[in-house]
Length: 178
Image (cartoon, rainbow, N blue to C red; front, side):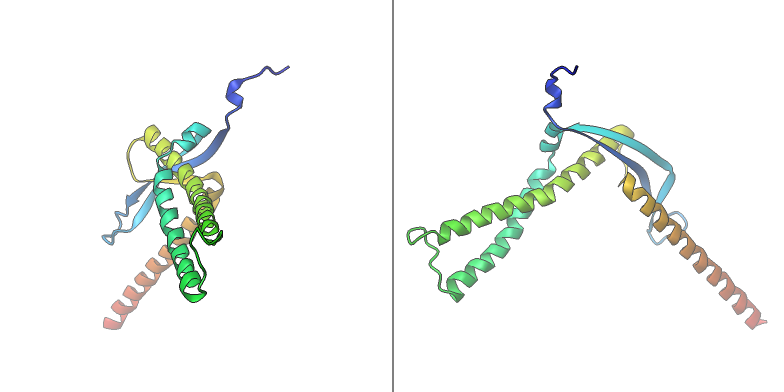
């Protein structure tokens, strides 16, 4: 029989992901970024709801949500007041109050929509930095890893074809000079 455990009240979530180091490509001087595939490491991170709520990315996303929603609602306010001659004062009725409520609800929804993924991303990155040290880390979920490998393979194939074309062009140029 299971006893009551107060820690089960709070949500615990386990995330599995991989990290790898991004380095500047040493093959050319163009400043391209490549990945050190030798540095790939699996991670398993467990965090509680408290870790999630105390993440510092929430503050930034709150300001972004307010700015985005304020822009849209400022335009809507202008259309309502100037274009449709709606009385938005609180004394005349509920139009102004309703507008403020919709503004607050929209800010909250957008804040959650942007804040939840940002907080999870930030927690994963901080976990990798704590475990592996400072660096330019790419953090990928388990589900994204297969797609990342396929894209990397496609990029390597493309680069090999470009190199072959360059070599063929050099040979043609050399033969035409003879």
